[in-house]
Figure: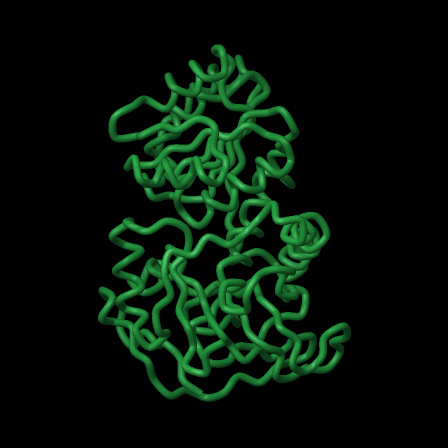
Length: 329
């Protein structure tokens, strides 16, 4: 088969479409013939040499894919050859085939095409595990999403609205904010021109956000705490704004607030399987009702992964950028 390899870390040109050995599904694994993969910022970090795959994972980038079951390892039940699926991966999505632990496999949800399903596993699992399983967003509460037009952001808006929450978002252009509004965002903050703390407080009569989903890390830490409501929960999922910040414990105590920080890729298999099972139970039915949809900015050929990485690094996109495998849909 062919896969995107990274012979040497570097810029987008470091991504090389090359012939590699076919994966073989081990015990408890399913072999998927890939129709499409999706680009995540973790892939960019891996390409640059800053984010090695977990031990035992595929060395090729790609944290999610869609495709058809092409092989079944020992000890696996519930899946058949030819099933249309999407999968949460520790790596290997930029390839024609990938071996996936069966617990990280999901059926393509109703109403979603096979290729577009590649836009779902990483973002849905990230949002559901952080906003709902950890931060326990409830109907009537306010969720603040930083990077509302990102893949994570566009799914967080839809999921929060589906459960009856109010959604505030930050983004850097009017066009991106308009797209967020189309998905249901109620409070729109242009972070280049407005202070999100002030805007969220104003829109909530001074209360603040009950839950904040943050991809920035250190840069926003102090202001995120200020933006939290009493009993608020800050869920940190990224470090685009740095890794070290100063935390005012007094402010946190005064609000009886909580901060969590999680990553998905390096979690044990059983934790990932539990998240995937929860997503299948609670989120997948929402696609049938039309409450959710994948948001895809563009689709590019998988061998041209370098162009896809440039699109994501330039941050002009809304939602996900997909890589279509040569065997196609």
